[in-house]
Length: 253
Image (cartoon, rainbow, N blue to C red; front, side):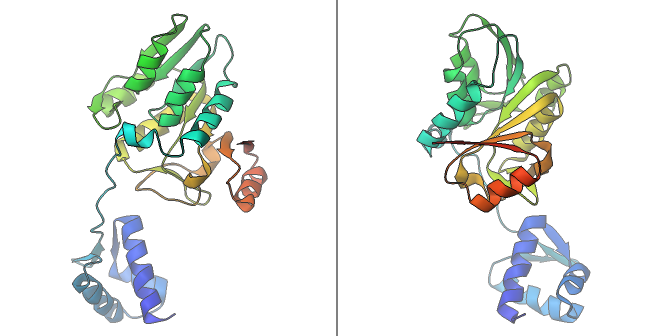
């Protein structure tokens, strides 16, 4: 491995794990610890990481939450098509969870006015469903994140412990078929993990741009999802991998 390639891999590892020890890097790259220390010194001077006692830490800032108004117009056509397909999975009498994604908001708009219970941490979803008097809406409560207009935190997580649902519909920032689902915000990731745990059936609503990406905070491994609804831009090899893992895939156009 060329030195430049090793340096690039070191930075990737540090950013992925947040921190790593010299001894670990020495084992991974089969070079001496002294070589790794020189690498870290050079990378620190280049502003790519920060050395710490016995290793290095990431200087990559946690990706800030993007405002709802900006997210809602990103890949809007794909999200609307995915949301409409997801809404078809809901039948009268269902108890479901919707997360605070923009796709969940589009799904809330697509849901018919029928008898069902929806638990959500999204103010936008709550406002949309308030127009449909047959739908019972339960808010998680919690700490408000103003950009996403959603509730997170220990209170929101504990509230979900009180409920069990048929289906959870959620999205995320990244879908990596080796590491799993991830989100840019750790509190959102923790709450989505709890949403999955409280459900019989988990439907991931993710447009094809999400695949192959890894965001800051892991939600769950890919095997925790039962079904994926995405668009025709998904790579055929990723679709095949999902099928091999017995995860149902629906492609919208």
